Length: 267
Length: 343
Image 1 (spheres, rainbow over the protein chains, first blue to last red):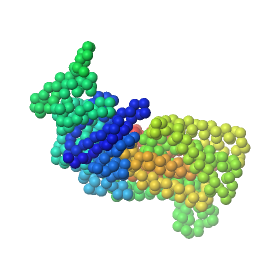
Image 2 (cartoon, helix red, strand yellow):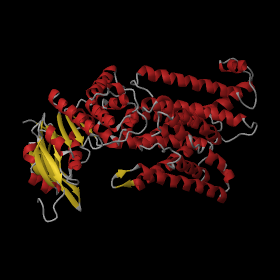
Image 3 (cartoon, one colour):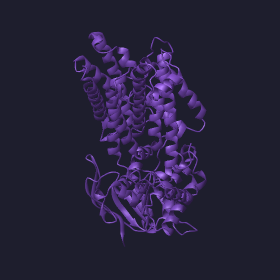
Image 4 (cartoon, rainbow over the protein chains, first blue to last red):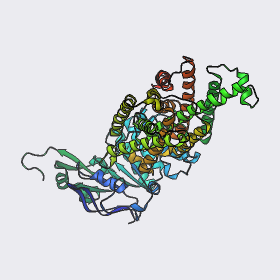
């Protein structure tokens, strides 16, 4: 296994509430992995540490074996892109202008995009099925379309690793599936390494090859979805009573939640 | 409004067009004034032919210096406005609202009161004190608005507004308490007026405005990225903290330079960037220079009105920027409001 992204013995948190203590993590090149866990488990904090948005108080984050601290912001942006959960773009930029922003780490000193950069941006829009929307203003798009524009912008960076912070929170069923289908295709066809936070356990179970189940800054379980998503573990992490069924078409685990029983229930 | 990428050709074409507009308005401003000068006489004087000492004195010693001051002031305030709106991610930001103009004016006034502002000194001491005032204001606002390591833009605007009001009150207080005839009238500082300055002074003003403007232009793509979100900008390779610090310092320097000569001209730094965005889109590589040219044009025109509307009485130019700019902006906004938002 070649490691794409890793953490070694990182400490992070507030003095009153330390979150990660001596935390380590390894993401293999070409993987499609998910981070799951209840609210407050540290999913977004972990993603921010791995993306370099926040610095660990101790320990190292490695990007293709290189210490993140030694990488310039532009170098890092060529290797790794992040799709935010939701973000407000100030002022009425067009869709193409927003996707072209992803070309920033590849620009020269004058900062003007070439015709080649524009073609690349349009290809990325095509990848997410929005080539028709290139000339529209971003804020006139639906939230599902906007999320795909942000995905296209991340792809325009031509990264080798893509990190996503729960990209489908505000999307309906169809658009959730659409995002995961796009990710799955990119993972297969371009060998793009993908790590995504997910609240939708069933989608994560179907699309991800590997899952990390986090609770209070610790890895409760890690492995293929069928091993991680058991009744006991989910009950322990989320404090919920669940049944684990089998998705009749893909064979992936399928989670059905129930309210916790008054007297003790599942934990 | 634009769907295609910004090509060098579109950038150059737009800027040439706006420069032509500025040149045309400057010619108009040369021709108009309390003493009428026929256009042929003016053109003859401009092309170097002698057409009477009076005419060339009026053109080159009275009107042209004032036009240049108006243009530099409009350009500097508009560039500063673009910068503050981008790096603070807030469409309400501008050097006036942030209290930076007020800090600069106070610095300039204090330098006059302690007698630094003497002939010979004037080209250096007053702008230097204005910059010190603006710089101290920026540092205070940044320090006060810094909570838990991050600088949030809403507290900055709020604190800036408090500073601005405080400085304005302090200027009025000083005017009442101290013999202001030594300095300049309160109207000069509070509303902003333009007066002919000598060419060496104008050159001294042009240097920080031009170098500052060019530096901000080089940061234009970083400004675009910050508009897309601070974390997002970082992930795309932008050094957000450095961009913000350089942007704020340069915008404060440019503001201080022009405030020490033309007082507190409000509104320009806020409205010109928005009007330019409505016309040419939000991308800063075009927005920064286009705002500078439109701001310069706007202030040259406002100065023409200030000299002619109630001639021979002169209306402070800062009154006209608001009286003419306000309705003009509302009309422009109404025309575009269906598609475009201001934030």
